[in-house]
Image 1 (spheres, rainbow over the protein chains, first blue to last red):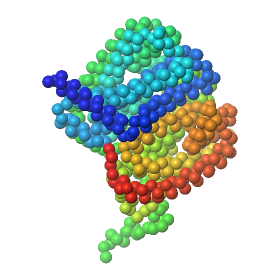
Image 2 (image 1 turned 135 degrees about the vertical axis):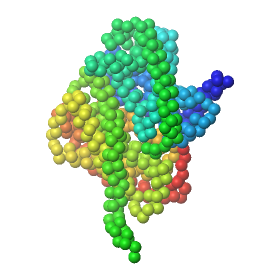
Image 3 (image 1 turned 180 degrees about the vertical axis):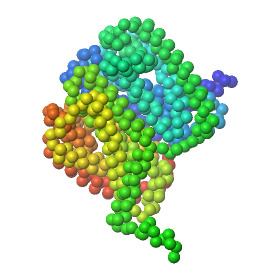
Image 4 (image 1 turned 90 degrees about the vertical axis):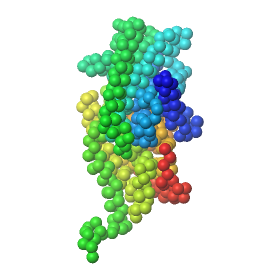
Length: 284
Length: 283
């Protein structure tokens, strides 16, 4: 019974999330919308890189920046996708209270709402990387990719991001006016502290430890290593660590953040119920 | 006679007096109201700063010349204006429709053009504060120095860029009036592609000529290019066109956008009334 309720909550939320994400327009415009935004974000970095290096795409820094930025799309999509469901349902559709009284499990419902963003994010990641390989000489050799490491890292990262999203969803529940900024601000901060588009050594020394505490730092590093191997290992930040060690750190940090996410959500959910925030709309 | 009818609020304003009062009334919540929500100001400054910091660090990783750091700080500050155009000008009539205020605007005996001008004026002044905060913070954090070569031209460029930009915003507001749910997605879509095409974080001259020329339809493209030429010592090297040419184009854009906004608003309002879209809410 519990299993079926959990599965039903997740499955229906996934379907609902997909409808909300995609049915506002025709499939062609939706495809353009899903592709143009991330490609433009990548193109900004490509032009910046190209201007300074006079178009020298053979430098190891280029795949570092390009792949980091491409996979970072998942952070915005999955993490913000889960937490944004609270804003969407409470403020926009005004249906969150109905979800709470329906026979579903709210955390799984919110996680399910993030799946649609994961799907559109995946399409954007694939197109961004394909564009990089075809037109910008990103040195991706399919025969040399460490597939098991790549798949394990990707899946682990997506789960970790979903749990971070749940943590933010909890905080969002307890905030009435500024909830829209929470996911965006966190994703923006992680972009800097995770060294997504520059090695962590570029950060001031006093702020670097924060980057080493973020699971996304190790996640992005492992994804780069699994795809372009030695190129990624050339940077000094995590050069002393083997793939196994980084995977171990990623697993440990994912568990820490995952458990924290679940506990924070439970606590915030309780507070939101006590304070009557579940159906509070501010029209902000 | 009811004495309350003799107060200053009982006098009926018409014509240009009503037009001006409407502008001020609509600008008021933008300037005063927004300052009351101080936490919003923090977010409005912090969010662009996160982008600025990330792009500055990318340039640092690439060992770029120092003026590029200044380009990013200026671009980051100008994003505040573009975001204001998208979310508080273009989408505004759509939000008003969702909230149920749009019908009240139409019913009231004032000009919709005055409402749009008020939105533009208020938005411009309120955003100016945020843009200045981003510039100040970015300049202090990264040690950016400026060397203005011509203050008059700089003032002219900035003002013309703002008039043209907010004229464009007024035009877009009319078009967004016809949108339903897609308004949010459209505004969302017009962020990164415009940051790319308008050269918010790099000189627009880096793009192929015809791409840069096409992007010049967005006033911030030429506005930023001219301002970079005027405030950075090596700015003239990266200029897309000469400053005087850019001033001339911005002047033309200002007139075209404001006039088009007036006609487009009247036309779209008519369509919206005819098709019963002023009060619909398609979630």
